[in-house]
Length: 178
Image (cartoon, rainbow, N blue to C red):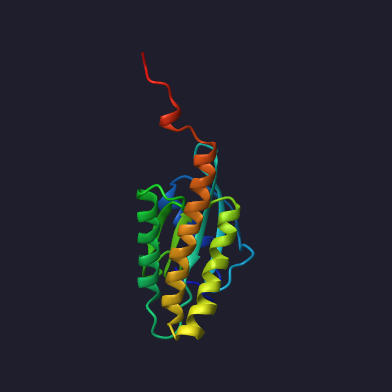
């Protein structure tokens, strides 16, 4: 069900999505986070069947020109899956809608990740990559964006693992069993 205005993610869209991901859940709210610039981003709060809270992020890609947004959604979704498989801190990929049949336009759904320093730095690195690589090296903004996203994920991973390793328990610190 597609809204006439692609910026609008309707309650009907949210209910359809929640029924696919979490059958029996109840929609609480849909909000637009600060900093949703080049894509349409919505945070969906829900209550699962067992009463526990659930928060997901819906990223929908504005369709313009001849750029295939379904392909972009597919690429980003697969990137999140790959990062998750290799234990790189990244949101869990939950749903891919390449044609916009549920989300209204092509997009992905991930688990909501609470703000931390690395989640703040990644978008800044991405923005910097686009604004530096595109004009200086005449690289397509789409390629610059991908480079920025990969570099941002790498920085996110380094910061997160540094914090985890610094406070974590290392096998080398464990005395051998008698």
